[in-house]
Image (cartoon, rainbow, N blue to C red):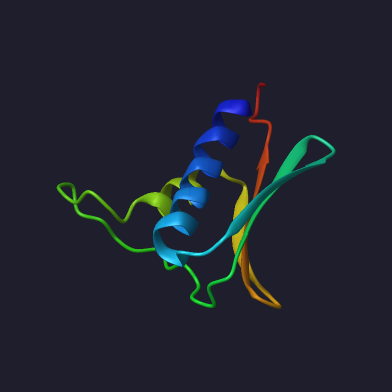
Length: 93
């Protein structure tokens, strides 16, 4: 699970740095056998899952988050938004 968490957190934090261009906070919370991660930033613009062609440098972040997490989403916050994800142990782990 640590490798998956690292990949997911890296993608969500990178999105906040590149697109929100504001202060942000990453927090991780253990929930039984799962971990919920949250990245809060001050941008009201929600991330969008975009299709990326094979030769494009950008546009795969949320697809990676979707592939590596059990679920993810965005919640409004008083000063922006919170992008969250849940990562659990894989079958057979």
